[in-house]
Image 1 (cartoon, one colour):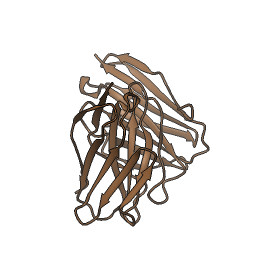
Image 2 (image 1 turned 135 degrees about the vertical axis):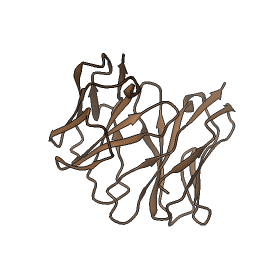
Image 3 (image 1 turned 90 degrees about the vertical axis):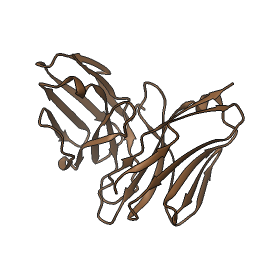
Amino acid sequence: QQQVKQSPQSLIVQKGGISIINCAYENTAFDYFPWYQQFPGKGPALLIAIRPDVSEKKEGRFTISFNKSAKQFSLHIMDSQPGDSATYFCAASGGGGATNKLIFGTGTLLAVQP
Amino acid sequence: ETGVTQTPRHLVMGMTNKKSLKCEQHLGHNAMYWYKQSAKKPLELMFVYNFKEQTENNSVPSRFSPECPNSSHLFLHLHTLQPEDSALYLCASSQDTLGGGDTQYFGPGTRLTVL
């Protein structure tokens, strides 16, 4: 019940296209859903995050869509650029009294072709 | 990335060696974390410290021994490791652990290879 399932494992998108990465969770107590971006040789960095009181959050070309009833959330990257090529991790935390413990998905390796 | 630094960046050690990983955060945070990142696996939380006190040990084998002398420094002491311990070890920090949703800031990691 603590797992976060992420798909696809890898994704190839043409420059200018839309990249979509999906995550699903089981624990209904989760109340914070961040996405992290990791470039080779670097640690993960927070990209965008959402709480379940909204269904969508947009920051520039990055959008999180959240479906509470389906227990799913997804990352959309609009107008994908070669510089977006990285590994993306979804995560979840929360549960009343939880101590900021993040449960991560397995990651999606995104390659944006020029 | 300069907010959280890790040394060394790469480490190769034999199974009988003893070595230590170091993490330092310059963000004024009170919580620090150790994660293990293996290929095609989720990041695995190992240890959590909040205000220098260990608040979580995620069933980590005793060959990994953390130390947090103050809120800015975190060490991971390694001894008699196994080849399956080869991975990227990431340190992170956050303001504290008192409630969810606190952004964790990661260092670049130490790539560990156990021969």
